[in-house]
Image (cartoon, rainbow, N blue to C red; front, top):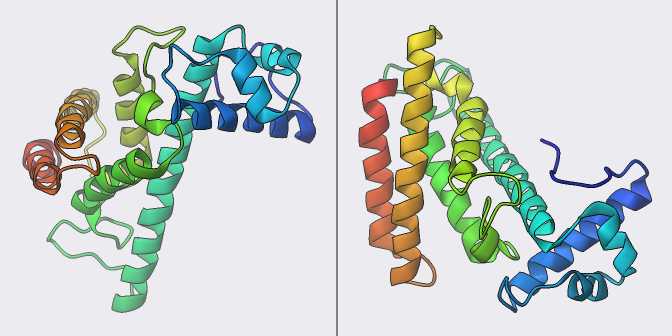
Length: 226
């Protein structure tokens, strides 16, 4: 997914690397100061680029923060994909085949949608604990520049539904797809609220609340996916 909203998309490798440094600097600063204190000049100084290079890509700090949020979503999807691919490879190696059982394993020999949803939660927790700037920006906070406030969770739900399509084993008809779309949106909204609570209770994410969140997601999504 392209990173919006850019004034100009990088074409040359050097330009892309400079954009990456700018977003890295933005993320680092957001771990040190508030969003209100963030400035394009501070980002330029941290990235060691001229202020004009920042304005080459972004009209203001809100646009820069939104671009960081979209990059976070891309990284989140990549993390999930790598984890599930590694799990599928380990499962196939252990069984010696890609056969599936009736216990919920996916068509690719992995652990099916339940394992996938655990990975979805675990990778969010990993980014929340360690990805620069993620604690504040996540996938669209504090204020998206071009989208309504609720849009980030819609983006996350749609990305996850697409990413996990081969594990969901739905019929594919229009009514089923619409039900699945609503279910994923509700699951993301619910997990968002509960995991925020977990991090309010414990800086590392309260383990009991995290465990209950996973159980709740499994129970709810089973109504649609089993």
